[in-house]
Image 1: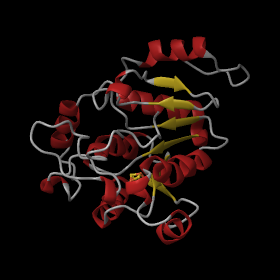
Image 2 (image 1 turned 45 degrees about the vertical axis):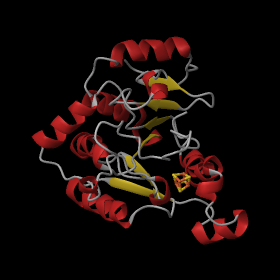
Image 3 (image 1 turned 90 degrees about the vertical axis):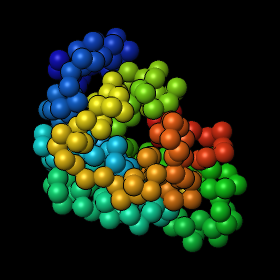
Image 4 (image 1 turned 60 degrees about the vertical axis):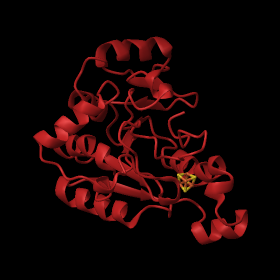
Length: 234
Ligand code: SF4
């Protein structure tokens, strides 16, 4: 399915694309996205263990595809090291995107520990807004979102059209947690160093806790808060 660039992308076209892509493999979806959009598409990744299969596929199928890492200034040092290891190992084209204010400037302007007092504002300033700037003028954005992660994500389609016209692509949407681990095992891929300490899903350090047996993999994110998403995918 080829996109006609002259044509306005509407819900009918998105629905046709979903019919075409929903049963394709993540690698096929990546190849389709790259051949359709070229440098008008980017991927984003949080560089945790669950991100590794998609990053491995990008390295193998579309290595030029820019992969955005939102360097909020609040990451674990292990995440930054893991990002560098994966860049080397998979030959990734990583773009580190930083917010307008670094953590010191943020504290000066909004007070200490904004992540505790107003995590939505903190995520907006450190993730949502920088990402918005990074994808400005582009056609499409590839994410590592899976339907089995949260109730909200279950409602997504492989291809989504945002109100601002940006096309969101979720190649792993129909993968399960089991698929991720099988892929990691099969290809003997590295795991985030904090995984062995119980950090199944890793985000910014102040908002990530280990997960206990039987809990949802994202239970350690914003623990004891109603928040489940940073706002990038909602
Ligand atoms: S995850 Fe936490 S520290 Fe990171 S941007 Fe969101 S609220 Fe701030």
